[in-house]
Image (cartoon, rainbow over all chains, first blue to last red; front, side, top):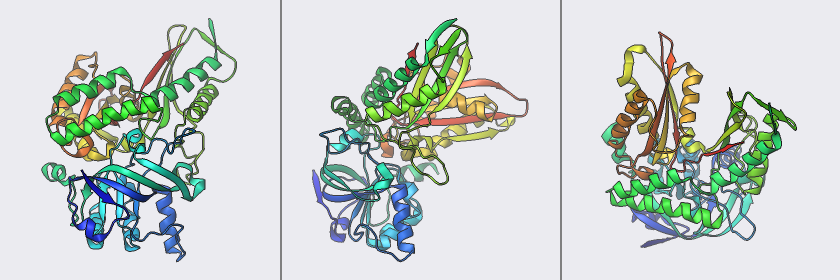
Length: 180
Length: 280
């Protein structure tokens, strides 16, 4: 069982290869469609972001509400390609890790390579299981977005598969190569 | 005429919202188990085991199986000998969704305008499809539809000369393009014929069938069998990491169409193939 400590470093990312299953430990932020749009619009206006982007990992998730006594509701990944248009800009700001599911565009894979970043896939449609690896959750930005608000999460042995590594290779390319 | 109070519809919808999101029906559970037994790729097996475990954790801890608890889709078959009392049927359905999503701690995923995108905060409105049928009962079928898979659906207005092979190729290409994005293993609804919207409605309705139950009609059944074979050969596998388990089932339906057309719609569901039914 390969455990990876968050926040990530470029050195650690260099050791990761596509298809490898690893367990993440430490802090990360949530962010999906609406939050990404706001982050990038804030940067375009030259304003300060509500979260420190340098070195962080963003998990593409909009959790379901927690029941009383629970830390978080169901919290599996959403489909990543919808964040592609915003991703290169955030990588420029120092974003190092992303967690989602599904393919990334070639321009995103290229930006991941240029910045020495990494993209992980979590299990899509397994949000109840993912929630068990989340030890704390707190809304830290855009509370008006509800499920789409940015949460600060702390995870313990959160299972992911390396989907695009720092060379820009994709775990899904096997299938793309065979059938395109 | 048989009187039915719309509050009964509201309560049934509320219950179905919660039940569907916390536990899969037996047909889907069996399909997942069968897939695990048939799968040979080790990573694919591991993924299937985790997905089955997830469903158990969801039921036990009352945490939704998937955080995308969907947009509420309701098919209403209204018996023509039913007299509805107590208010508006449509409002009763929306009310059931509103309270179901609140009481069930389900995610509210609906935005009022697709352009300006402000959340309605109660997961309404539902998407409702009505049909007036014979009899004195109301049949309600409910599916919370997640958009990871919904986004991967496709409509093709094929030419008659594209024929059966064109239909098969269109469906397979849609599944290939969806790949890992739609959370395989998938349940694939296919509607062939009718008009543009009829093909889509047929495709959606096929997602409400019990998973793995073959179509009654032979022509549709043969399409399902051939599509399953071709889709298995794609080697997409659970979550797109490879393996034979790309689809749990293909459900197809045909409808008469125009001399000039061959509409085909593919509506995709993920492995969390939620569907519930109540008859009042």
